[in-house]
Image 1 (cartoon, rainbow, N blue to C red):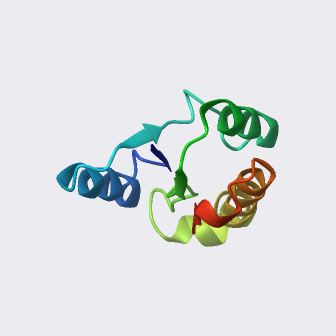
Image 2 (image 1 turned 60 degrees about the vertical axis):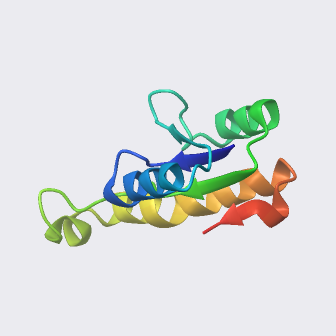
Amino acid sequence: MIWVLGASGYVGQAFIDGAKSIKVPARPVSRTELDYADFRSLLAALRREKPELVVNAAGFTGKPNVDAYENQRMETVAGNVALAQSVAQACEVAEMKNQILK
């Protein structure tokens, strides 16, 4: 099973749709279901469910427009840099070293 973080966004939804079209099992993982921004919660879920692959399509998007990136720099770094690093580290600790798609 492939997990897709951020599947409600444009890229995540495209990945889910593409996986369905070639009959590859992919599961959208929402933040309401699993707070994947929390390292411990993500690590516990990875160890419990053992997905074969984790796709990180989550991140901070500029809302209401791209200027939000400039105005909300901390949120941008947290959502687009720190989150990606945390997901990669959780996968590595969960012994998914060769199965991280960035």
